[in-house]
Length: 203
Image (cartoon, rainbow, N blue to C red; front, side):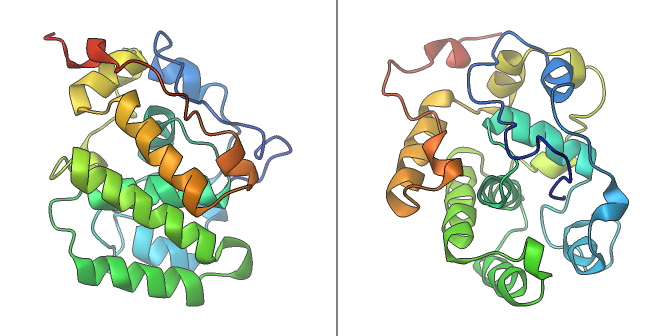
C-alpha cells in the first residue's frame, strides 16, 4: 500500500460513477507507483509477505483495485479510508490491532506518510464501513488484480462483494462532518439519492 509520486496524484479520484467501466479501465487512469517507493516500516506492517503483517495486509495492485471499488482518490485521507476498510473486512481483525495501527501510523511512519488526526478519523470510518457492511469478507485475499475481476464492471464487482454506493455515501457524509473542508472531503460524492437497488438484485 503506498502513496504515489506523480504530478497528477492529488487530482486522481475515481468517484462512485464508474459503474459501467471495468476495473481495468478505471485502473488505467490511475497514476503509476512503484512498490519499492514504499518505506520499509510501512512494508513491515502492510505487505502481506512480511512476518509482521497486520490483518488485511494487501499487495499494492490489489489495494489499487479497492481504491476503485470504494471510489477514493490518493490523498492520505483517502488512503486511510481504504486501509481501514481493508483491515475492517479481515476476518481476524480485532480492536487491539486497530489500536496498534493507529499508534504506529501516527508515530513510526515517516513524516510524508504519517497519519494525522484527520487521517485517523478517516481510517476509523473505513474500519466501521467494513465492519458494518463487509464483515469477514477478507478483501485482501480476493485476487481483484486478476481475471475475471479485471474484466468485470465496477457495478458487477461491487455487487459481488456487497458494496453499495448508498452505504459509501453515508460514510462519506460522516467524513464531511468529522473532517470538513479538506480537499479529499470536498470531492466526496455525498449526494442524497435513491438507494442503488440494482446492486442488490440477483445475478
